[in-house]
Amino acid sequence: MASNGGRNVCPTDWHAPTIGEWGTLTNPLGGQYVAGGKLKETGTSHWTTPILGNFDATNEVGFTALPGGYRCKYGDTYAYIGRRGYWRSTTKASSTYGLFIEMSNSDPYVEFSNYEIEDGYSVRCVRD
Image (tube, rainbow, N blue to C red; front, side, top):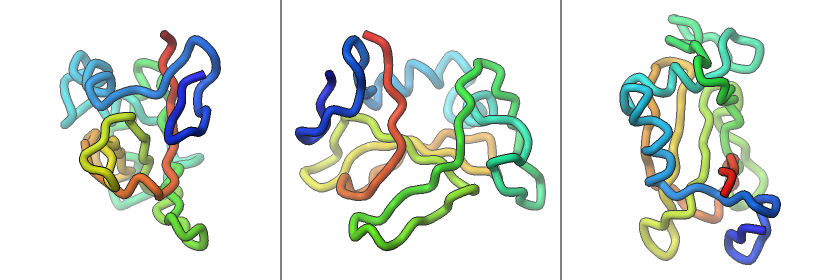
């Protein structure tokens, strides 16, 4: 199993992606400014409705990105559930920050960001 901070997060023959592997997914879809729409689940069953709806969501590659938000490292706060999805990479920005991707209900972007690694984010495993 792949390991993340001593915790097994992916089954055998799968691993948590690097930020480069996220780029490998988004680049053929037109890059970070349009790839989010092509990865997000369509409709508003899980994504809350902003003024423009779940902006440009087509899920054309079957990734079905869902808006799980994130959990604060202190465990008592959940944020952005229904509005944003955050996914980990194994790439660190520093000893306390990691690189993540995020998607929003209000635009078609995939944003590459850094956040505290102790917060709780979604993981999508990649087959070896």
